[in-house]
Length: 75
Ligand SMILES: [Zn+2]
Image 1 (cartoon, rainbow, N blue to C red):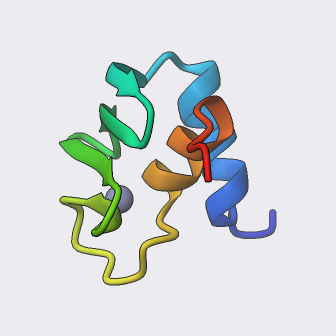
Image 2: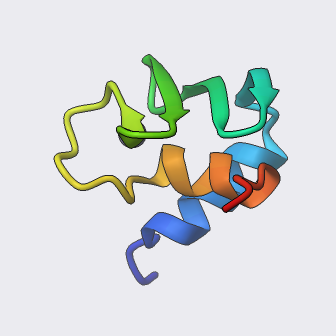
């Protein structure tokens, strides 16, 4: 079986109910996502953009992809 890519993983997190949006108003979003055993904090702020607590350096980890699939940041 092919390795699951970040987007497939993100969709699985959503299906499993692992993403919780705590706050979403305008450009401010806070959420948590349970990755493989660990709960990560995600956020979006106007200047900083998207941030996730997980060890992935990129800001397109599966947690943030999951969060972006269910939230929309107005531009
Ligand atoms: Zn992450």
